[in-house]
Image (cartoon, rainbow, N blue to C red; front, top):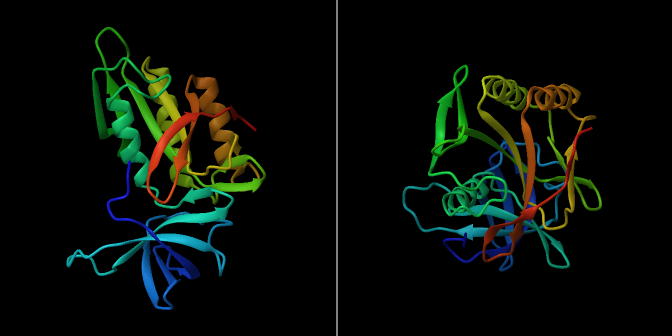
Length: 235
């Protein structure tokens, strides 16, 4: 999925109020950019980081810049926009290009289920159980090659695991899909030290029949696209 407008490089000054970031463009201008990431962004929000931002001239938008990537050097990037991978995933699911999630006739995003919850994708096809697919964007890495989720305590994430467990116990297919927005990751696990309750809920969900999958992304300043499955290990 290509970026709508060519990205430009910048330097991060600070991120604050979760959705705002002060940045310095290469021409010296200091501007405020929108940061579409509600997480802690542990390891990705330090002063002086090289980043890539997307300009826009939409008069309806208050901020004219959107932070999209962290540049780690050596051709490696992390995508910080948590909404972008879901859009790319929808296209891939519809085209039947996601390993393990092919053969479904319809792909329905944002469907209500459980207790006041919405599943990211509901996949339906003839002569097979519905597949409920919850997606989490993964950006944390504290060891070379290892991506981890979550980067902060997530009560909402635990609720999703509990809802998926009920789906699996009811005879439908329940899938927890970790979408890794880092090009330097080769495997995925849970950050049990950050949120032990989430890790415990994941073990319980696996015992209830929830499937755990991980996919990585190919990321450049031109596009973000789904790449290949990554090994996932419970803690």
